[in-house]
Image 1 (spheres, rainbow, N blue to C red):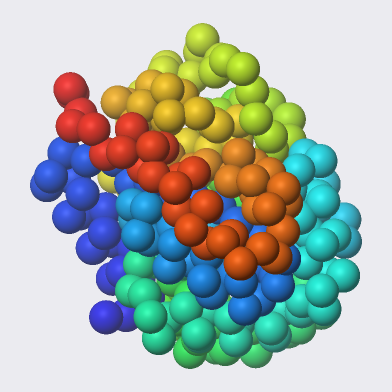
Image 2 (image 1 turned 120 degrees about the horizontal axis):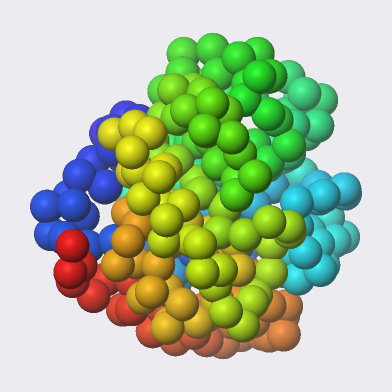
Length: 272
């Protein structure tokens, strides 16, 4: 199955079952790339429908302290972009769930955009989400991505104007990533009251599925968002637990148990 088909087919199948995609995020190489392969399988067993895999970067401006520390641990363990792609290749031997790389532009520019796109596709990556590239600048990347069957996943922020949100919807493929709040990644006690309306407004922009992330950290919050969105992304809550457990022998089993209630909350039948 081609990269583009994996994301599209997953959302299509879930839509037919009236289920919302559970999309966990982890940082590749935290605590090591070998453990990342094991964690990917553990999250799939817990109920993950797609996996967001963060490429560690030394200046992660969109990330809060939890994900920043994860990137620091991954870099300290020797993780490189080439290593992340090899990690995806190892995951793909075991698992067929779609994999989206969550990255900043600098690692890709240094690696070479065309070279990266070719090798990412060959490794089994399905989509690329770039946190620091505005829609006006995405064209220099999307040609290489789409030529290699990689979906450019675009962000829509609470501060995005309707014009910019529509441009992101036009440029994106796979799904649209709606940021749940203004600011950086990290857990929150309560979701913003305006989120439901932002989800509805984003869904009106295109036929792409809409996944919501940033600040969603409990099964209750997951369920609240899952009744409106096509996908729910949970990152910091899982990454924090990985940081607490470190390279323990029961890391994968504990993360599987930690993520399962959130996956179950996400998969509860929709009412709409």
